[in-house]
Image (tube, rainbow, N blue to C red):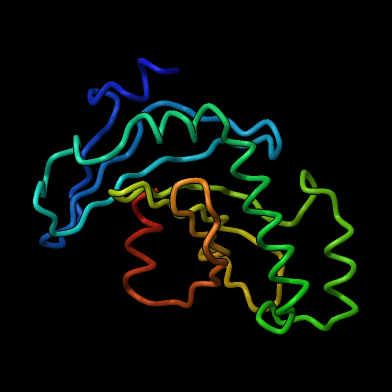
Length: 170
């Protein structure tokens, strides 16, 4: 996988019709054994010094994520569970329901359609486009932010134009 993910020829530039936003999608398949699904990889850079230069991304980090995709998915699910435990109302459920969700094994946890967006400086957003919670909108799902290997937050995106653009990139 090393040669494939680090080869710039396996990344397709995406025309977003938005000035100062540069995007690429990985043309090969990264597969999660844990979820039994493909995981899409996208790179997004905003108006940076290097602008349209794909070399601004840390491909060693991207390769590490790809090679250990299930570790990152596990971390994301554990982060969602921790958020459920302390902030169940954010998901539109009651405390008793949250306890039931916490007992679900990670490979059966109600999140699907994973996608990862990488940003320069080793920031990553792992989004599950489908999640079975009342306050989670189909197609926007739940996102988990990472800086390097450290999970920083759990996000339930709301409908707006920016989120729809990222979804269209996957």
